[in-house]
Length: 116
Image (cartoon, rainbow, N blue to C red; front, top):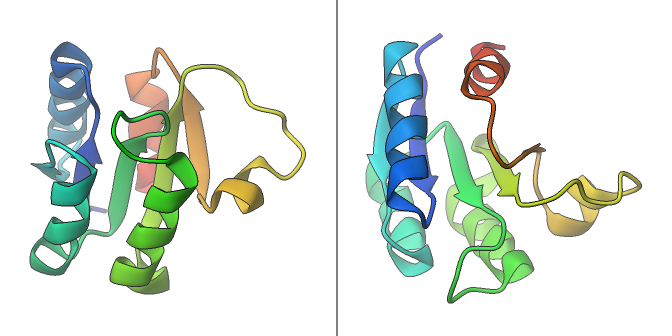
């Protein structure tokens, strides 16, 4: 299943690797440079998946998740990339995300998860 994926990852090399891996698996990727651009792009891109770095600079983590939920409604899958394994109890509910991956992201694992 091809998905439209909006990506926000701060580090250029990591972002390029993620976008390339997803494109190889047939997904259409769109890149946002910052949290404001990500939220502004939601209406235009109409993503199936929003993939963002949980500790992205210049934006509170929870604030970004809430802004995406309001703008993208419940239809978009919200996936966070975290720098360390979070507490398992209630992380997704507390942060407002549907799924998360730890850094470094295992690109094949991410691509498989998006095929579901």
